[in-house]
Image (tube, rainbow over all chains, first blue to last red; front, side, top):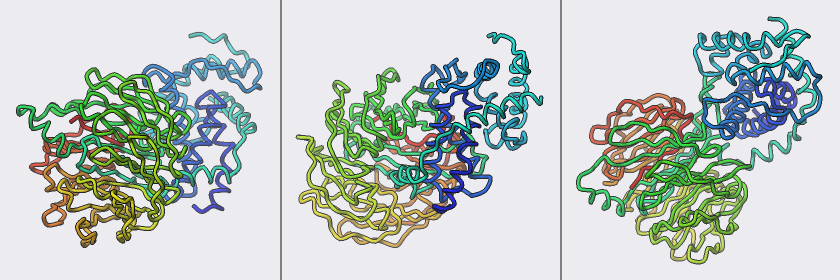
Length: 163
Length: 440
């Protein structure tokens, strides 16, 4: 990947990846930071990254890892990567969107990641298994649990968020 | 579940619209500042020299992006390791241990999970991981074995975490400069010197108080660090400046920089302390520096030099050269500074030499193997295949076992040196093990 290719890759995919990471992390500032840092690393390692579909997945996985490593630091124990209700500092979403985001944040991190890869990034279960390093069966289970947790919060009438 | 698709899409689109990317030139500039990592994708292992038992020889490895498959290998801009292999000093200490040969503890830095895993070498059992900082990638241990220091290679939260080995608990992190890349401990165990890659400084830390002293200015991108066996001088390779900065430990003052080749990286000092060998990644040479005068001798052509280890008798420096997935190890006779014919190994992520000096072990990530080289003949023995991406090696002070960090498999593989056979892998309980240090 030369400078020109990197530039078009960067400008073309940065916003999309921030959107994906936001959906995965529930924190806009964190998503932006993690994606930014991942692109710096992508430049450093450009010689090893294939252009095409591989590059975007590379940045997404790297950004996820960067964000995940920060949660681990912030919280006790690496198993509890449930995003604690962290206020979204950026202004914007209306009340029902807020309820959905809050519900999404309560979904365990890896379930949330699987949901986003499936429903937003449009990957297949097999592709998600490859990107997240688990078996397809695990991906299916994560998707099912994540959906179950979110179902009550879908549609316009969003129920109060319970624990 | 159409609504979920829509909700996620709306959420993501909104964030995408508000995304504020840095200018691409800034991204590239930041990336280039990490030049050293960019050059060796597979990793720059760091060898350990025999010398002071605490000599930190960090290494960087980039075990490679294995397609999307490597989610576990999720790709952290990886990193370095330090190991203390006991040379003469701790060899004696170990021998004094009344035959208790297997009483060591290996500490493994898991870059991806921000943890350090202790492994008891007597049982090859991993203990629960200890929380360190962001991206821990280099370790060193005090000569008394009481404290391991872990450098957390992070731009924003550059810290060093001390770990009490008696209890395997982390003490509060000590703030360093940006991106601490390497560290070394003085032979008297009183001071840790930390090279801050993105600050262009070295931070001394007093081990008695675990307080950082004022940083010492170096060149651009100090990346590796070594100390003379008498503990009087620390040498820091400035990857961005093409120089080495000597620092007098008595005064913590930097001496004038010594010009090397381009992008100097790994550094190793002979056990007699007379010569420092510097691997110039950019120019593909090794520069010997006479420590008495701090003068550089003529460079020795090697190829893309990423790693150096020196035998305990000081007679031979083994230089690992790597490019892409291939690589060689070139022995250099220190008496004449002449290079011997290269030994084919595959990309050499790390080199470690046994305390008896008979075998150099080369970890090759792309080969998924460890290659033993007999130093008497400079011939490679059959590869020890372990799979994954071996990125780092440390050898126990008694010379019985080599521990190999397998980056992509989150394991550590013990290798029995007597037979050159791999033992069952030890799961670290963390992600991306990049460096190992073993207690004296």
